[in-house]
Image (cartoon, rainbow, N blue to C red; front, top):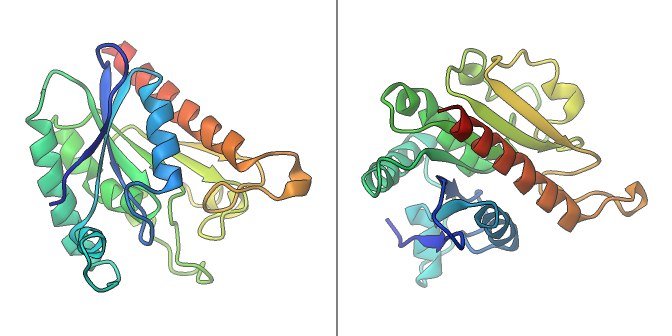
Length: 217
């Protein structure tokens, strides 16, 4: 796997978040940087990493699409194993942007049952492919046992509020909505919201969720 980018809080971290990127943007995209910095500002250490196909792009390789989901799961599982060994006493949460969040969600229940993670946080979950609302990626989300948060733009073309509220997701999954946000949480100008404001709101929602679960232990 590629090296990590670590965003550390000023003081001692109270939790750690393993943060995976989306299908087309690397771990140092503007979105990943902004969310990571905001979480670190709330006392949460963030570890960003890249799946091998994205790391290969960074080091001069050809622009390849993501590997099949099964391979991405194995890649994520390998990183999770490495990170879990860093400091087992620090509560660990996993998740990611879009595809990265989906891959993390597929590992969440097994990792939670094994005591390796405390929860899951996804930003812009791809509930279905763009333009194909009938091809749902929700089967494992209907009975999820792992505590989870999904932060979603209300007009996300990969899962809008109207669509998601009809899916019957597990009670352990909280969904936080960003009004008029698209898949990258970008609102339309007439809405009165801003991309940066939504990014901050997304990070605050994630931090509140993580710190809330930490305080229960």
